[in-house]
Amino acid sequence: MKVGGLFWFAALTAFLGWVMLATQPNERLARACAPVEWAGNVTLSATAILDPSGEAATKHFFDQTDYACQYTLWRLFYGQAWEREHEKKRQETGGGP
Image (cartoon, rainbow, N blue to C red):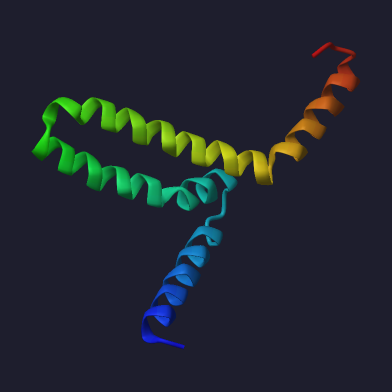
C-alpha cells in the first residue's frame, strides 16, 4: 500500500472513530457533517477577502448544505424508528395524523 493511501485510510478511520465516540445522536450527526462546516468556514473566509458582496450568499449555501447533510443522515439512521414511535403514540391517543 502506498504512503498516501495509508494516510487517507488512517485519516478516514480517525474521523469515523471521532464521529462514533460522541455519546448523543445529535452530536454524531453534527460531527459526521463537520467537513461541510469546515469547508464552509474556509470558503466563507476566502469569499470575505475576495468578494465581500458574496459573503451572505456563501454563508447561506453552506448553512443549507450542513442542514441537508444532517437531515439526510437523520432520515437514514433514525427516521424509521421515529416514524414507528410517532405512529405508535398516535394509535395510543386515537389521534389523527
